[in-house]
Length: 281
Image (tube, rainbow, N blue to C red; front, side, top):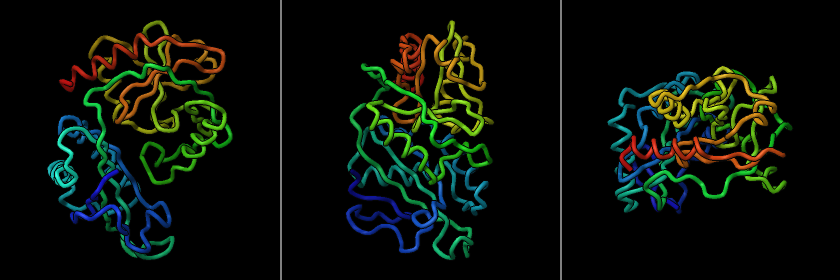
């Protein structure tokens, strides 16, 4: 756990009270966040994370400070890493909340930021040795709207999906949108492989616009692997040769089983190698 956090440029002990009373992220979920992987002291995909964050702030009618750019956040993240004596690998969470004040109607659209950093042991992406077992979470459907692609602080569908997956002895649940298309898992984007072709949910289906999702799509295209963004249903999953999940921290994780269907991990293994090569890991 992080010993210190960066709250609006101030390095504070993580053991004390960090959030101001009335914090809107805490009270109303009025905020966004990004989870960023640091490898060998380098923030991977930082610009892509910031692009999504800034687009999300605009969608939430938040004022974007003029200094919120790559150089600013790279400096603020590394200042915290140094304070926490993390010189190599870390999981960083960057949170943006609308400033305290008001009830549902805020009194200001200015923002606060909070950065947390935890040490992780691995410096390269590694494919999970034991494949995941998943099923569908159909109790709550994710709505399709202008906020669906961003990491907002309304995460209850993902929290409940993961809790109920554990209760069923599963590793994860797959999330459906309001049109019953399968769009993602509780913490990752979803890919299928059929006859050497990649398939993943389109952004207009309401899935998260994951930074690793885009990395995998680009890597596939660069290596002459066809990729299609489309609607996915249970029949597509059962007909696939492979199925895997992607996110910024874990990279690629292969799924071993969905209901009665078992999967291989040939494409997943290849993509992990390509990721490590891309980042010189």
